[in-house]
Image 1 (cartoon, rainbow, N blue to C red):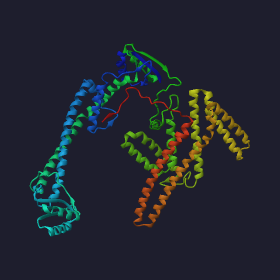
Image 2: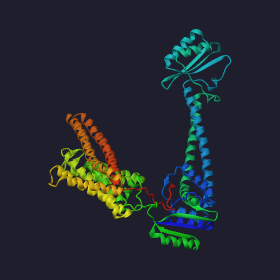
Image 3: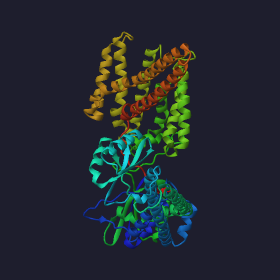
Image 4: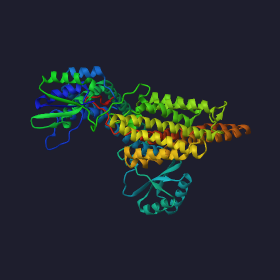
Length: 618
């Protein structure tokens, strides 16, 4: 990367912006206001562009369009070849008016439907009693009650009890939805007594709010409203179809307009990242060195050599944006760097090493052919149906292949040792532990080697020797001490202790007081790899328990065979889920905590050239 500064008079600003945007090569560093220069102001069209873009996205959302990475290139080019902004503005206005008209019609139709359903609900209650609807109006000498009783027996009891006090009443009732609907007409003078009797009978009143103006029988009115509701539903369907037609007709335009307007707005708001004075502008950023000459040539041609362009290589303390460059098979593993932090400009990108070791650590823990086959198929399907998470599922596909590989080594298929294993997780736990620790030693030392290279590139051989090579010297001293204490070599253990002291002094020279303090941490880092054995053994033991319980059910026969099959499926499904979660998280931890801390600093910003693709609606 090369640091570039572009400056010139204000009248050239728009030309430079347009050229940089079309080239898509410069990562612009945002200017912070200071005494020398203010922050630039957006171009005049920014407000109008923003307003139209908001309308485009609002229309896209209303029409149910989803986001997509790229617009239809032909449609976008067609829009640009026309009047561009004017074309977009007029079409958006026309579409907005058509859509609003459809929405108003739809709203009215839905409101009328809701009202019709409320009326039908009330009419349905009255269908069972043969009384004209106009009977339910206020009277001077007559009171009426409508509502529910528990059942018809309560209605009969009510009739008997009311007849004791007065004969001037009429009671109608019919069953409605497991209850009994009643309509009681009674002399006004007996209102209070009737109210008391109804209350004792568990009466629940019902008020008819929507049929006050209706006349005739409830059944006839119900049929009439039902016909009207069908017409309204048909109208709603037609309106929705019109909205769907609008979506089909304008979807490509909206997608193209979103892309076109986003680009124009990005250019119009670009000066907000620049330094500015009343008469000039200044842009600071980074351009890949391999295309610097071509970029300068194009800018000089566009500005007729009236813009000043200064460039220089990246300095030691510069915050340089980075773009990861990995082969296609390792590219999905960049996911882990984006999740953590990007490597610094002169650091080795760990992506390739993660590609090599993450699936192996994952597979070592899960390590079952059956589990590997199930997860492999599952993740292949998910990658197809969830393209946005393609890289994540690609990582897990590699991990599943490693699971199958280690399953063959352990001879396991859904917890059964179906072949003679090279190493048995059930019977050779100590061998498995030693192997896990050995993997830890190898992994940590790879990190230290990468750290040595990073320090050599950044600070020279002397610093790399004292800060990183001292760890290898410490390991030699620790090995000599260990072998001497356990009489595995004739050399005195004091030789090992001396070497350890020398390495501690070297670490102090290379990393200060932090170096010697971190010596115990190296041991804990290596021992942390024991989790490879622990997670794997816990998984296989759980699988064995599931197999034993289901096996007992199968041997019992009868209906218990189905129970055993259910236990087998659910048990292994749960174990696979726990195994996936544990293997993923612990493998991730071993990389981030035990591996990366030996060489990785990170903290760089991802390279995002001005004019790079935006996300548009689909």
